[in-house]
Length: 186
Image (cartoon, rainbow, N blue to C red; front, top):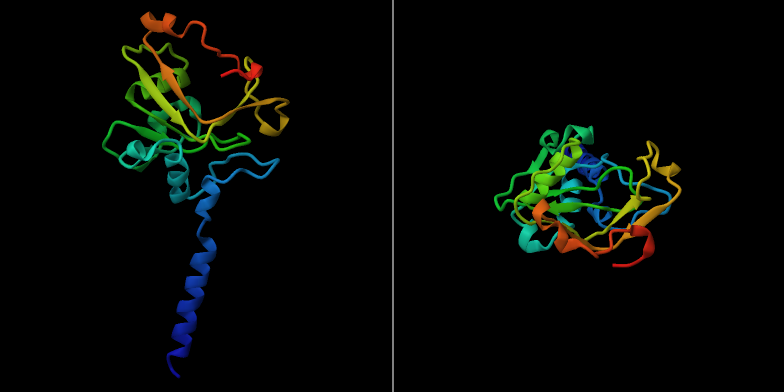
């Protein structure tokens, strides 16, 4: 009888912790209409989301890095959520998109991404890869980035894909490959 208050207290703490736990299934489930990706998630959620971007053979040993508060600061300002050891880096959703868009990049693609975010010309010397197996949504090509994603008039949805970056000397290899998101071609 004297243990009842203790058991009640333990039960209330357990219920409180369970209520605070984030539903990890939302890390990969489609977003409800009219909502956008956000960085307001737990580290555990962000890791689950980021790892959904690539094949398990890559993600099981990949580093997971959160986006920096200001993406223009570059990925070197992102917080490491999980240390990996295979040269791949996975990142959760970019905030402000109408669908999940995590990515996993190799070292070359990370070099390209960091230079691009910093507004610098990337100096790429070998092929780089990025997996985006959840797909992505982008504003119209050439549109200035909107401060409020709800104000974007047209989103282009791209299904699961792999992105490739090549050295400048090999750019001719991509000649003729569609890069226009609006024409619904591969």
